[in-house]
Structure formats: structure tokens, C-alpha cells
Image (cartoon, rainbow, N blue to C red; front, side, top):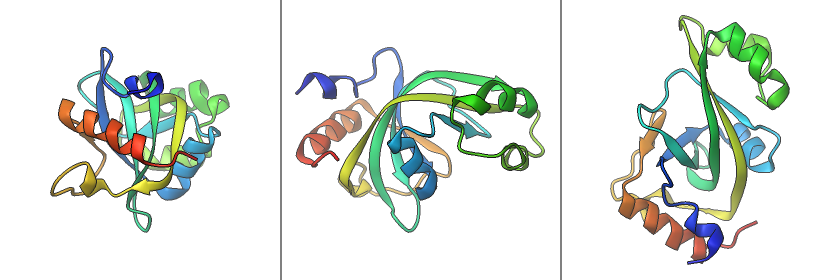
Amino acid sequence: MTNSLKSLMPQGGRSIVLSVKPQYAELILAGSKTVEFRRVWAAHKVDTIAIYASSPIQRLVGVVKVVEVVRAKPGILWDYCSKRGGGLSKAELLAYLFGKDAGFAVLLTGARPFGQGIAPKKLIKNFSPPQSFRYLTQSEAHKLEQLISQEKVR
């Protein structure tokens, strides 16, 4: 296992598969979207995110590290994250979080795209796309490392 792949194993945090619309997955992996907004977030600390690009892509397209998670009212989230590459307009963010007292801003770094992407069923037997996210088991995180080492990274 190479040094860069060791970081996929949780280091004080868990690994998850996060469903993301393809246009946002592309921005995250290009490094221009460094904040992912969410209506709900994990109860456990998350260290690594495997990005699942939803339909029509339906593949694991890369991994990214979590720097920080901020929970706040929508307007405060906008003020805090608007200059950090959120990829949404203020109107889009407020519409997305409509009806929520607070939302989450997940600050991201170290995006690593996969060349052709990985079929999720190679990682998780009976994979069903998570509505938001799904924790990876230790063995799934290890298997992801193996799949990445076989996958051509962009």
C-alpha cells in the first residue's frame, strides 16, 4: 500500500460513501468546490469521503478528505462558506435548506479523482445508492484502497 492510499483508512474518523449530483462531483474533484452543503450529517466524525456520482454516472468517482464540518443557520453558513467554493448561489443554498433550522457545510480538501470510476458493487455487495451517505466498514475501506490501486487515477 502506498503512502497516499494509507490516508483512506480512518485516522480518527470514519469513511463514508456520499451521494453527489454529477455536476457537483465534477466540481469537487476539480478542486473548485471545496464546501459540500448538507441538510443532515453523520453522527460520527468523518475523515474520508468516497464520492458516488448519482444518475446517470452511478459510479464512485473519487475520494476527498474532510477538513471541518460546520453546523449553523442557513444564512450564517452562506456567510461563512460563500468565499470558500460552495458551488451554489445564496438563493440555491437557501432553497436547499428551506425548512431546516440549521444545515451543514463540509469543508473538503485533497480531492483525488478516479480515471473511469469504480462500480460501487465492486466495493459494496448489494449496493443501493444512499439517499445522503453510508458509512464504510473497515473491510470496505480496505477494499476501496485495493480498487483504487487497480484503477487509473486521472
